[in-house]
Length: 575
Image (tube, rainbow, N blue to C red; front, side, top):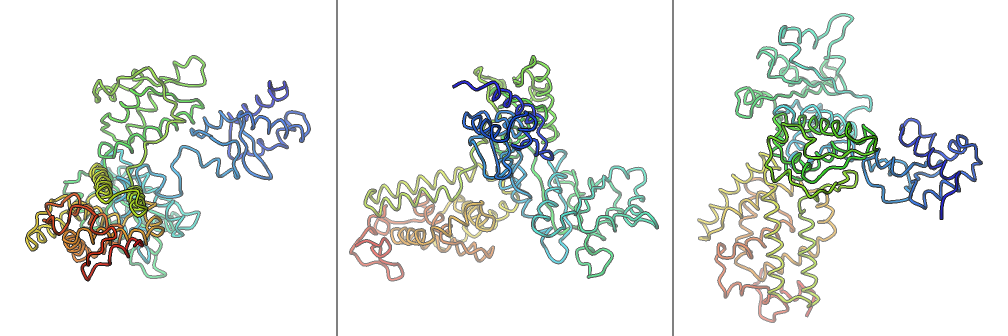
């Protein structure tokens, strides 16, 4: 059914006001305002607007008032696909915007991947009582040091550590190269001109490029930062929180000295060291930003997308963003009046094209709409693996899966998980590497003591599981709480079937508690046991008589069980 002339005019008006969308002028999108602008009755306007919504041409949000938008124009503004006709609240609709969700570190691409270790350190610096701790954010040029400091302020506000009007006061130390002593004057202030000591209270005081100051000025600021962390109530320095940044190389004397003076350090990885999915997410994020800024749809060829993801950027994220802006600007000029731009490999700056292989630029003529292009799926989570294992276990209990097949399913899940963990190993930062070294020594000792031959893969998995127990994926704690009883049953079942491996796994888990003070919970102990029993069977030296190579002995066996293990029939709840 064709739409009437009035509806067509109404859609054109929605197109005009949505193209000029301003979050501070939402009244323009209400029924009352639209009816007034179109010189029609409110009831007729509401009827026509809802017809446009039903046809998929418009979208609405909220209740009393209801806001109406031109669907495609709003998708362009949000740089996200709108897959519903209506939303309960305007906030829900606006949350589709391409920026990262959340009010704190969640806004950073990779906050739970390669930035996880740095974010953990930043939280420690903010939350340590009574006034936080001074910290150093280290990273070469363009890795996002100032951005992460801004997120620290946002996180602090959300956590109630700062008032809503708290600010980040940023000081560029490069401005003091010619007169470094002036930084002391600006910090302390003078009569009638308060310094940062007063103006930055209640917020964050950021000193960028601290390595550019002479050692005496560095020491002056470090001393005040440490005093502020221990300041008594009523002290002039109470309420000051210090952040310092440096682009000094990781093996430089400056960085070693800064780490010696400051209690907390967060090191940001180069763009090249970020995971492939993070680099892809960053590229899509910046492309969507350009589409929003220019008011156009952005389409890109697969080859150009691969080039942007795989290129080498000397200035890291900053250079990636400049390269995308450059490419989109060139594509904009060639759009020929269209409301969309097409980014091809030839639009990319020379620095991008010079740093990739020809195979990256190859394409098949397709164009990908970045508004609708989903981010790459996250690395397989522990909860996903455990879900699959529990599904196999329940099939086994329902006698839909025999014991050798269950062995195979669990072994396949473990192998897939360990491959994923290995691919993302660098994302966890130096703390995981330290865990690996310490626990590796413990596994070597267990090999000597028990005369077994566990490989380093066991130590590596133990380090990863220990790390993830302390800093879990977002969904893991909720998963554990909802599946605790099934995991305990499955752990006992596997231990009954593999007693020798269970003994070795207990000793390995105990080494994590003894060395790091981390007592692995049931899901982590299950994964460790599954690895040792099914992937390191030879290393655990389980004989055929002990192991039988499968779970068959525990699937309702009438034979006596070891005294310290629950009978398998009781574990399974079947007779």
